[in-house]
Image 1 (cartoon, rainbow, N blue to C red):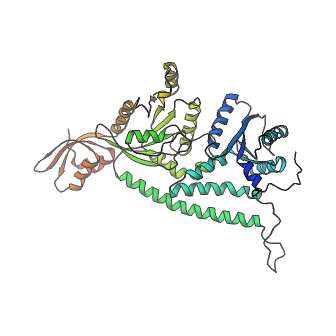
Image 2 (cartoon, rainbow, N blue to C red; image 1 turned 135 degrees about the vertical axis):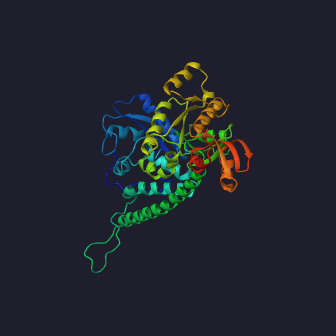
Image 3 (spheres, one colour; image 1 turned 45 degrees about the horizontal axis):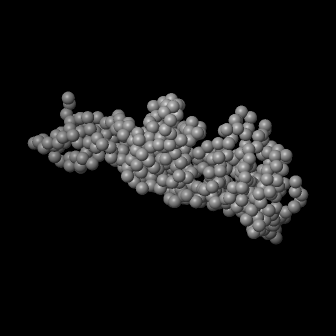
Amino acid sequence: MSDPEQKPLDPYDPEVIARSNRAILVGLQRPGETATEALCLLDELHELVGNVGVEIRGSLIAKIREENPRTLVGSGKLEEIAALARAKECGLIIFDDELTPAQQRNWEKDAKLRAIDRQEIILDIFITRAKTREAVLQVELAQLQQMLPRLKRLWSHLDRQRGGGAMQRDAGETQLEMDQRKIRDKIAKVRRDLAVVVGQRATQRKQRQRVPLPTLSIVGYTNAGKSSLLNKLTGSEVLAANKLFATLDPTTRRLELPSGRAMLLTDTVGFIRRLPHRLVEAFKATLEEAVQADFLIHVVDLSSPERIKHAETTLAVLKEIGAGDRPVITILNKADLINDPMDRAEALAAHPGAILISTQTGEGLPTLIERLEQCAAAKDKKVTLLIPHDQYALLAKLHANATILSSASEDEGTRIEVILPSRLQEPCKAWIIPG
């Protein structure tokens, strides 16, 4: 183990920079967890790290009975990991678990290696993928909250101070305290800016709600195929890539159903296990699209060996944000990758009522469309209306947002037989013809 009195790592040293782009991944297996579960999480970390341009030169799973408060793992395992990193010429250790700021500092002090965790990797991915003003602010807020307790780790000159005034007996602010204050001020500003943007999104949502169409949000684990489904159903061209967190910003498109009914579909950010809590908080405004929806489509990757865990993660986050009571249509996507009838039957048994689909081949999409028709029809009402001639605005709204079955002009007005969406039933009730 290195001399505790040695200076901390210099983040500007070229050799430190080079080695920091080469990493060893460390998964943890706690009591009660199987080796398979730990390996699946480590594989997921491998995929996450692959999205940030870091070269992975090795990995291992550390079995721990209890967490070491100083370095998370015991001293023996620390030496083993450090030796592997030195042999592979790596300067970075990435844990598939959360590290405290103190644990990160102790790794740098004891092993002369940078140590980061899964949460920092996810945050880095979010930073590069955020596009809209809201997503950028949300990620910036999470980044500042992550940085604040870790500032001490960045400073090797903690005795550097801003001098006190001539009448002050104490020494004044340290550079660390100044930076902490600046970050707190920045957090307050970002929160104010975010409140404005969230208010604008709420206004946009209210405008959509004025259009009497059922709303449906597509949710699911990251990389399950949510954007591909939106594109397939609506003919849109939302980015759909085979990588984690390909899209972060919600996208809403209009879906025209064969019956003439229409729905609004929204693609939301994907979920992931051990999602940093600060990101759940930061993205609640985005996830509110799911809270406000009439129905949810839960997309599950049928080809993933961890699909049950993924589904549980998604449902847990939905419950946390207040969308746990929404009607859910579960679809098992990527059915083209699973041909064994027994495997398909087992998956359907594990997810009762689910629909097998493939956005690549179109398998199961007619069944899904039929289910969506049922959802849209659940709030509809077939009625006959006699609209007075002076109610042109209402008649125009019916033609734009309801399904007109027949229409005829009469002396008293226009008689129409219509499938009436729930949001138009109240404005039209005065002109319903009984029977």
